[in-house]
Length: 623
Image 1: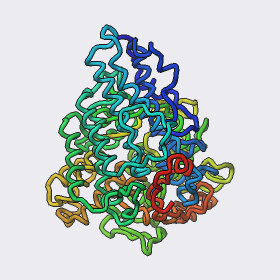
Image 2 (image 1 turned 90 degrees about the horizontal axis):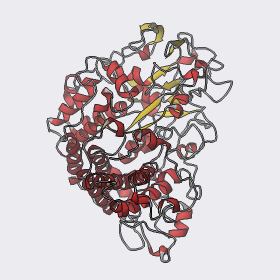
Image 3 (image 1 turned 45 degrees about the vertical axis):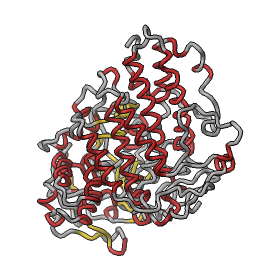
Image 4 (image 1 turned 180 degrees about the vertical axis):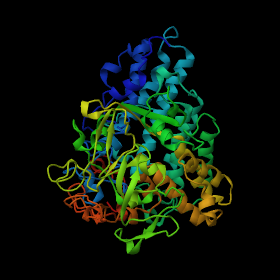
C-alpha cells in the first residue's frame, strides 16, 4: 500500500467520535469527507476507513471514570462495585430509570448507527479509488473491513436492545418522509443478516496483518464476532423464552422467537469451531508451566510483536489512563482514583489451587453465609504467613486468599498488599475507613475492599503519570473455546470435545483437569453447564462479558438482583481477625445502599422515548 498510516492501531484510538445528540442516521456523511476528491487518493480513502473504526466504543474505559456515555457493562455486572457518585450506571443497577432518561444511548445506539451509515457510504465508494493509488486486492480488504465493522456495530446493539432496524446497503437519511411506517426487524432476521455479513466479510479479510497494521479487522475477528452473536442467540433470552412471546410489532410480527430451537446451539458450536479451524490462534502459555508469566504476557503486552498476540483475535489499543487510574490505589500517588471494586461474589468464584471451587452457593442467598465445599481446602477464618505467588511479598494474610488458583492473584488486589510499579513499592495499602486508600477522605476507594488487578503492568510506575497502553481484548481465543464447549454441552453433552477444550483453559490457568476434580460432571449436562459458566466467570472477568452472560442465560433475576457484598471498609483498621475481614453489604455502591434491583424488564434496554416518538416502533418488554 502507498502512504499507509503505519501507526494504524494507535491512530484508531485517536479518531474523533461524533458526539452530537442528533437522532441516529439523521444526516448524510460529514461534508468534508463526501467531496468528489475523497476517494481519489489512497491516503484519504484510508482516513475515511479509519474514521469508521473510531465509532467503536471505548471498550477499555470503565463507565465510572466520568459521567460520560462510556459503555457501562462492567459497572453494571455482578463482578464489580464502584464508589463514584452521580453516575448513570447506578440507575441501571437499581432499576431507577425509564425510556425518557436515555442513558448510554449514544454509545449503545446512536453511535453504532452512525458507524453503519459511514460504512455503507464507504462500501459504495471505495472502488472509485484509481488503481494507481489502490490496487484491487487492497480495495477488497478495505471494503471488507468496512463490511465487518458494519456487522460488528449491529452485533453490539442486538444483545442490548434485542431486535433493531436493519438499514441495508444505503447510507440512509432518516429525516425522509414516511419514517413512522418503519418497524424493528425480528430477532431472527437481524441475527441471520449479521451472521451472514460477518461470514461474507471474513472471506475477503486477511488471516493477519503485518505488525505495522495491528488492530485492523481480520478473518478471525469477523468469525469471532459471529460466534459470540450466535451463542447469544442460542441462549434462553433469545431462544423462545415465555417472557417475550407477546411482543408483536405493528405489522403483526413476533419480534422474538416464540419456540425453543436446539439447532441454534449446533450453529453456535460450529461458529466457534470455524474460528478454531483457522489454526491461527492458541492460548498463551497453553502448557500451564508458568501461568503467572503467561497471564502477564497476555494482559500487559501491547501489539502484535508480543507473545500475547497468539491469543488476541481482535483488540483495541488505547491509552492505559482510564483503566489504570481506577485500578491504582490513591496511596500510590499521582492520579489514582482506585475505585474499581471487585464484588465478593467474584472473589468467591475463583477456584482453589486444587481446582475445586470453594464457594458453591449461599444459604438463603445471603453472601454473609457462604456454602463451603469441604473438599476444597478453603478457610476464611484466621490469618497466617503467606508469600504472594506473583510478587513474592511475605504477608500476614487472611486465609480466604491463600491457596487459590493463579487467576485469583492475577485479578484481585486486597487490603494489606504491597503495590508494585516499576522499581517503586507502596507497602500496606489500606482500604479501611481513613486508611491510605480507603473511604473517609474522598470517593476514591474500592467500596468492596478489593481492587481489580487485571491488565496491571508492574513495570509501569503510574505515579509518574506514565499509564502506558492497554491492548484490550475485544475477542480472544479463550472466549472462543468457552463458547464452543457451552454450545456443545447443550445439544451433545457426551461429546469428548467438552472436556478437551475446557481443560485447555484450566491447564493454562495451572489447575487440574475438570474430570480429575469433578468426575461426576462428565456427561452430566446440568452439572457441566454449571462448571462451564463458572470457568467463564473466572477466565473472562472484567472483559465486558459477564453483563451479557447473566442476561442472556436469564440468571440475572438472581445474580443481579441481590446485594453487593465486600469486606467491611467501615472498620478502622485491617488488623488480623479484626472487623474489616467480615462479609458485609457494600453500602458505598455508587452512592447507593448496595441492595441492587433487577426485574424482568431489565433484561433489555428500553427503546428511548425520543425514538418511540420519532419512529413509533414497538417498545421492549416492561418499559
